[in-house]
Image 1 (cartoon, protein in one colour):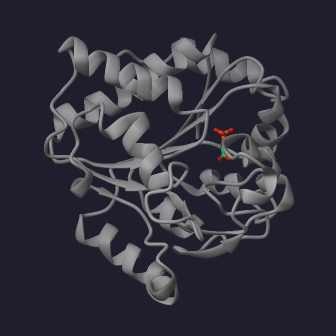
Image 2 (cartoon, rainbow, N blue to C red):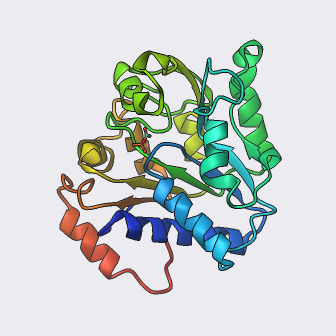
Length: 261
Ligand code: PGA
């Protein structure tokens, strides 16, 4: 894992946007893995700002895959992750909604939604870069603690803590769905590059457990330790409980110029 302690959310957004842009420049038909939540928003705003300023690449040929989706919201609900990704990112980059995929939460299709989503990702050639956040409980996508490290896309039940954390997006906590469809940890591991962003003090324990704790289903984000190209971009608060923080700083400062993230 490459742990990159940065100074601010603005710096994180600029670097994460650089990573996405360089992949799309190299491969215009890249497959982008997208995440929802508050953490990626500065990165998404930066990508749109550059796109509107004309300095970004064309996204016309990319395909996107969302990490997860709520189950039980009416189709088109503004808090559905399909609607959220369109509003926060893909519409602003001129990516047609037909090129943005998410797990299908329609009630009749739930038993096969996981395997259908896996097949779609595979048919697209796999994900080139997957953006990730981390839950305060160490969850990755909606893989709550206890999720199999080999899991594939499937239905999951949210913990009370995650439902409370996400209640801010709804009018009342009881409107937060109980079930979700989420890429599994095994699905996420198949992406060619993982880029995890964590900001704020509330993520510091989860980051420390993921990076410096054992690989364990009890901290789903620790599965990143098994990936050959996983990068973590951290603000000072989220990095605050890492024991090897000084070393990560030294590594980043000494990073060879030829070696991108
Ligand atoms: P957040 O969510 O970015 O809104 O903190 C991250 C997550 O739950 O994975």
